[in-house]
Length: 80
Image 1 (cartoon, rainbow, N blue to C red):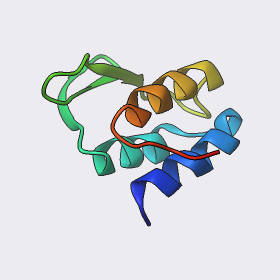
Image 2: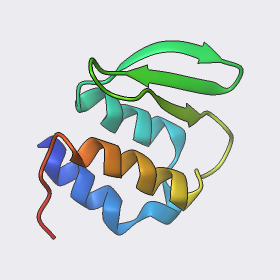
Image 3: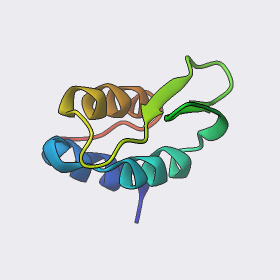
Image 4: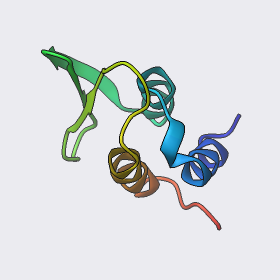
């Protein structure tokens, strides 16, 4: 599936996103895992601010998912 479409799907359901789902999207958008600090996975992309995503049980906070999606949308214009 196209990354832009995946971003749009996540945007509609930010409340129940798990770490592995978000990690898959971030990596599909071209970010690479740089390091792990405790439970936080740090993803990097040249010329961008690193993304820190915690790997905790259950769903991630919706504000964190929104922040990550905002960062991903800088590379992919999403309609709607």
